[in-house]
Image (cartoon, rainbow over all chains, first blue to last red; front, side, top):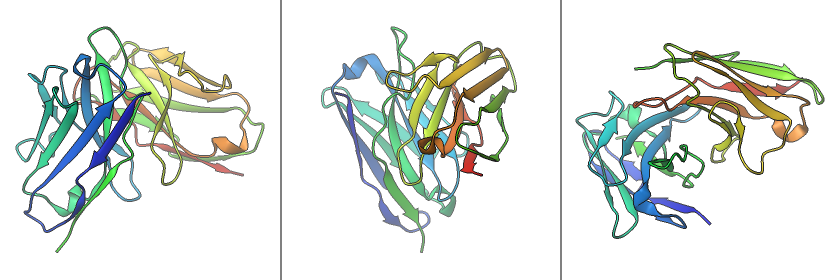
Length: 121
Length: 107
């Protein structure tokens, strides 16, 4: 059974930093890209960032490029999102999600439970 | 970036009704489209992938169609548990983009 466990959310002041983690199990981790998706309170879903299975390619939505960094440790089946220079508009529930694979699996059939990031003074 | 325009943004319907939700892509995405259902306070659940493939375990009253730039999600006969918010997602290329969502409410 695929399991994704998000953690690391919390309250942070504007301009601060936070690092989210996602622990994965139940599938061949390095065969799959991984993504982070967020949802601001009362709003829709927004894809934030993705990383390839080997970790050598990373992708970002424009609003976080240069502030957020996605990474993965395949030896630990972990994916991370380092968030710097946080803004009030980054306040959201952040989900990690299993993305597509090189053998044709399609994205987001499995999601973490979400971790809440609140940016406020 | 590819923009996804979803309509309607909200709708009300009755149990037993047939419902259709539409997503339009700003450029062709072949069939790299998925549909998700989300209930309040819950994690999104994938219903459809590759535009028309039904996710395992999802009731057959849900179906998807389309290719290129026009896509639809159809619920053939609404059940009480189907009242939720629905999102489309294009995964043709990064950055992936979601539609704005359709909130389906009970009439």
